[in-house]
Image (cartoon, rainbow, N blue to C red; front, side):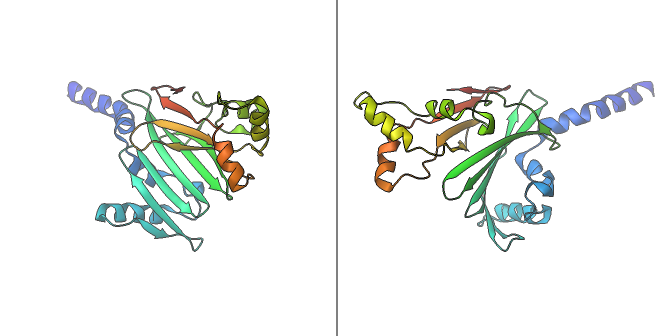
Length: 222
């Protein structure tokens, strides 16, 4: 009897750890508080999963009379087009064998793209810190000149004067991010909100994306 009770106690103690280890992106998607996307409540999020399971386009009419589309769903990643002007990415990141955290990337297009990134535990409590992305995660408190310098590079064939001219066309400095579907790699790029089509092509020649890969504890640049 004692051993039976001991086994039950051990199972109860270990249950939260097992749940954390086994959680999938589907679980996280359904358990996400409605306040995260107020117009896409749990019932509508469940509809997305139902369409995925049926092998048809996962398109749902949400509560703002618009359409959201779950473009991709894997065991640890999803990309959802919320509207013509916004999208959402969620990624489960393993911390160890029993713990995972959720990385959320929200991208807004107005029309230039800009992203904000937040981290949560599997119960959707927000986590502090940038997990290696402190300088560019949410750039409100980042020096704009420093931020810009991290995303541009002068080609060897370009004069310094031309490089400065093109750099000044990147105003305001807006950063957007996207996950690789197959790996926990996050790529950051600069938007070019005000440049003309001709200038945009030239500005692209000085831009450099930055890629960060999750290593089990933080993102490290690769």
